[in-house]
Image (cartoon, rainbow, N blue to C red; front, side, top):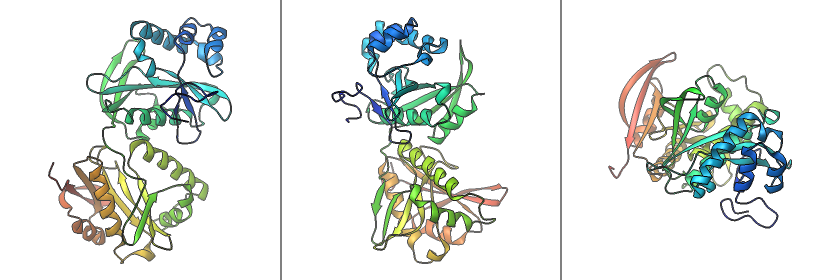
Amino acid sequence: MDQFGDAHAGEPEDPWASGILPRIQLVKLDPAAIDALATGDLDKAEGLASVPLGPFFVLAASVHTWRIRSDQLAATPTDANWITRVIYDPGLGVSVGQAGFHGPPDEAGMVEVGYSVDPAYRRRGYARAALQAMIARARAEPSVAVVRASIRPDNLPSHALVAQFGFAPVGEQWDDEDGLETILELPVGYRPMPESMQTERLSLRLRSIEDAPWNLELLGEHDGGTTLSLDQAEQRLVRQQFAARATGIGFLTIRRRPDEEAMGYCGLLIGRGSFDEPELAYELLRRHHGHGYATEAAAAVLEAAFATGRRRIWSTVGAWNAPSFRVLEKLGFQRHHTAVNDRGEVVYLVRDSPDGS
C-alpha cells in the first residue's frame, strides 16, 4: 500500500500508516461523514466511512472536534488532506480513536498534532503509533519545518509520549477550553540518519528487539549492574527503535565483519543536548575494548550526523573516562565546559560541521 498515495481497491482512502506496533492506519473521512459526526449522527457517518466507527466518535469531546473540522472544511476544503482522521487497526478491524493535524503547514512551516484514543483501547500503544505516523507524514512534506503539540501541564502521559519522540517545550499558551497548555515542538527539517552503514571492519544497524541479549549483558557491566529482565530489555529496545524511526536519530548496533558478532552500540541521542544539536554516544562490551572499534563506529556516525544537515554535535564524558576522551579527540571534538552531577564531574565536548556552516 502506498502510504501517502491513493488507496488500492478495497482499502481505506489515503491512509497514513504506522511502521511500529500496533500497526495502524490514519484513515481520511469523507467530508459528509465528518458533517454527520459533527451532529452526532453515528449511523449516517458509518454509512459514509470506509472503516467501521463506534460510539467513541460521537462522545461530547469527539463531536466538538468534528464540529471544528466540519466548519474548517466548509471554509477551506483543501484542508481535508491534513485534518483529523480515524485511527484504524486493520488487524482487529476496529477504529480505536482519532488523530491528525489541526490544518496544513502555516507560513512558518508549522503543523500541530492532535490525538485521542477510545478509553477501551488505551495503554496499547495506539497513541504512540498514531503520533509516529503523523511525524512520518510531516517529514514527507517539504513545506513542513516543525511539528507542534500543545498539552496541559497535568497530562503527564502525553508529555511522556511526545518526549520519547524528541519534542521539547518552547513556551506556554492559554486555551479558552483547556486552559494553560505547554507548547512543545519537534523540528523535522533534518534528513534522517541511515538505519544501516558499513565501515572497513564494521557493520552498523539500527538496534532492534533481537539485540536484547547482548544489550542486557552490556547493562550488566555498568557499575551496580542492572535489574532489567530480558523481556524488559526487549520492550526498551522496541520503544527506542520506533522513536529512532520517528525522529531520524538513534542507536545502531556495532557488529564486527564478517562474523557479525554484536559488540556494542553507537549513535545519536538528545541526552544533554537538543534535537538540533544532539549527543554522540557509544559503548562496547569490555571484551571488545582496545581495538579501535569505538573510534571507527563513531567516525561513521558522526559523518552521517552532519549529513542530516546538523551543524554541531556534542558528547558528554565523565572526567575519569580517559579512553573516551582519546576517541573523541581523534574525531576532532574539543572541550567546551564542565558540570557536576551526582556521579561527579562531566565534561562537555563539541564538534562543529566540517564545512563550517
